[in-house]
Length: 120
Image (cartoon, rainbow, N blue to C red):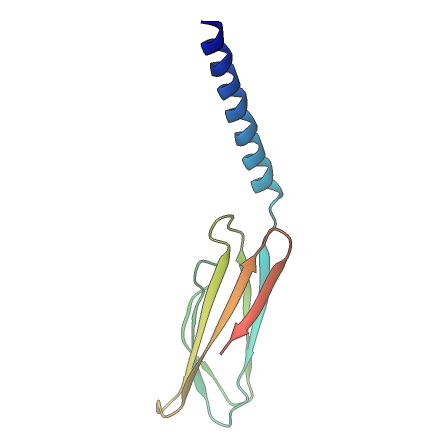
């Protein structure tokens, strides 16, 4: 009887310790953020589509950028603990759809450091 009571108390303490450590780590966990500015260096207007993935940024559909114009898309943040990488897709095309392209922006919220990089 004493052994089962001891094991039950041990399980309760272990549960409380695990719950506390998860709570503390989630409170202390930082977030990765980037402010994204896009510039159109083409000689013709382009249309921009921006899908923020699981980040907190805004979605943009067919935003027109004139030649040599730039737009500040704002701040994009990943503050997730388990799904800690945001894949942000940036697509653009010319008015006549003759030219188009895409860029992928990764925002990783890591335990030791945060990383942001572009993939072509």
